[in-house]
Image (tube, rainbow, N blue to C red; front, side):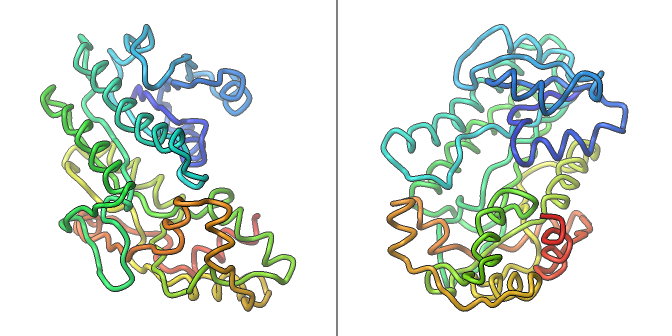
Length: 307
């Protein structure tokens, strides 16, 4: 396949390209940081990869590269786990809503259109709750991230007018050598790890290898259409996560991080971690998708020794 990817230099995108590298695909990487992309994907290792400069929220010559591609994977988006100033909230929304709009614009104009668009969203779609359980058929929430996800997904749905198969993956917290775990592990190494906030909030997660496999199956299986939760089938509460992390690292999990400390660091953005949501991958399981890491213990046992 010839696959166009945005966000390829990120945590998930890098793992995806490396996983697909040995399958004789061609890649077009859209990036705003050419030097970073060339470092991550050197030509000597990735001879079938083309790096194209672009600005996600702007039309440009890059859009012409979509024509002739078999698939598009749109992973671009400003990071969530930062302080939400008004400027950053605007960037979070525009990078997803307007960024997706520009991808759809390119697909619509393409003479030789791709057959599929993989457009991740996030479990923030459902809002937060300590008591509710959400699956793909649950209604959206009404907070900032829920509104972002609704706008994001609404833009992606426009690709159906071009008769292109659409797969939306509502991604949970991705666990791997980087991301959320990279921020949690150092305190545990110093014997100062523990749950964040009350510890009762739900943590809906997915191992990065399972997410990559789900994206790959979505690329290859023409029968996969619609919206799917990219989360493991066994979400845990924050306290359970930290206990499992401490056990895996042979460290105690006794020093809770108080709410106010995270609020000072992240402001409004802290609610993602402090409130959480229990999300189940009902439709994903009905696809017959086989998780390699279905429990938090199996995921951490795989990741932590390699960090």
